[in-house]
Structures are given as C-alpha cells and as structure tokens.
Image (tube, rainbow, N blue to C red; front, side, top):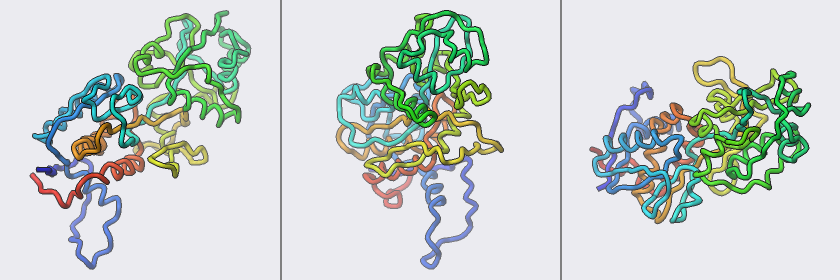
Length: 352
C-alpha cells in the first residue's frame, strides 16, 4: 500500500490558524508548497541511484534519511550505472543502461579553469585571454595579455598545455560566459566530450603549464587551483573566483526557457540577489550549469517517489553543505510538478 508519512519540518512556520472553507479564497501557492513538505511520500520497493563522487557522502545521507522515513522503501547508492539503476545524478546518464523517461534539474555546479603553474596559486584570466589560450594565439604563461590580467605578476616562461577533453556541460557553461562578456565565440570544438571517470584527472592536471576545464565541485574535492575570471581585461578589481557566494549570485539570474522539459539559462539582465542574511550580492560567476536528475527505465511510481524524496526541501538543503549548490526554488518546484504528474495526489493517500 502506498502511504505518506507526516513529519514536522523545521523552518517552515506557516503560522496559520484559519480553517479554509468553501468560501475562503484559493490557498496561496507558497502555502501549498510548504504544506507539501510536511509529508514524506513512501512506496514499496528498492531503487539504485548513481551519485557523483563530489557529493557521494550526501547520497549516503539521503539513503539513510529515506530509510528512517519509509520502512518499506530503500535507496542504495553507486558510483556508476548498472542495469539496476533507476536514478542518475549528473553526467553518468551517458553510461546508463536504460533510457531516461524524465530529466529534471537537481543541483547547480560550475565550470572552472584549473591551472598547474609551479609556485603560482592565484591567477586571473579575462575572457579575451581565454579565447586566445584556446585558439593558440596565446601559448605561453608569460604572454603580455596574461601578465596584464594579473597586474604585472611575474609569470614563468612556460608553455601552456591545452586539455584534450572536457564535459559537454562545462564547455557550454564556459563558452556562454565568455561570449556574454566579449560577444565572441570560445571555440572548444577540439576538445572531445569527457566522462565522469575523467573528472579527477581534469581537476588535477599533472603536466606543468597545463590548463583544463573541470567542475567546481571536483576542483574543490581535489584541492585544485583555479583561475579567477576578469569581467574586464586587465582590471583586477573585476575578478570573480568561483565560490559558494559567486555561484549563488549567478543562480539568482537563472530563468526557465520555454522549451520541452525544464531548461534553465542565465538572464544577465537580471540583478543578482544576495542570499538571506546578507545585504549585498557577490559578483556572479556565470559559468554555471545544471546537474540533472534522470529517472531511468520504465515509468514507475517507485522511481517517481524516490525522485520526489530527493527533491524535498530538506534533501535539497543538504546540497548546500557540499560542493554543489541546490537548484533554485522555482526550478525545484517545476521539477516536483513534473515528477508528481505520475503520482497519486497526496490527499488521496492514507497516512502513517
């Protein structure tokens, strides 16, 4: 039997003492959402979920939390898809043995430029300089353009070694930001698409002088040095380093495209917003990309129920303690609505 378990959710204070009647106005959407988070949907069965290495500890926590909430539903985590996988977070979908019947936004990550320059742990790169590095017109780390971006910093006479691969999402995120800053296309067509198993090597390039494109989450996990991006060439005060604050600022510029499915994109015209408790927004690091949650195989109530659990506000809240950021609330709500299309209405389910 399918059930929902009622729980108390810390931090959701409705403060409502009104009893809604047929004469009352429709319940506001934000209150509906808050009430939906007061219950945990449960189903019978078990599922397997693929979790990226950068948030593998969170995957274990979600599985434990589910086990404590739903006695007849379990979730196990693995680092690569198998024929039993029903949920995949991130790029491992490319290796999935079953097709996805639904993809929804789950988290936010960013593309960073990791560098391996001896004794250089901080470096700035402007968008025109990045274009020059990847088109080959800038081939040495002591090039005048790089020196200018770094306020005259003495840099070694060292050849720049380009990567041979990068993930499709990371290439797209970096190219988008570079084009928005310069109006010019960053050509990364020479880089083949990487897989999740390549992520550690991209975050830790071994060759001195190497530059690579990696995810922010993997770079943090591996303690890598990555470049700040100058939004104005040679103006060091415009440097934006990927961080929780700067990536969050960019997420507040995300909007949903009117296409099939849920597609998020940055609207640079939107003013970045400060996080709750802060009075000023950081400069946005706009090379961000969506980490999707894919639901695999046959469309089933169990798979949708497991996915719905991962998109609860409390489950999403734990992402902020890791190396990624949770998807914006408006996108989470859109994702929940897509998932719940295949589930009974909560009001129709018995409670424990």
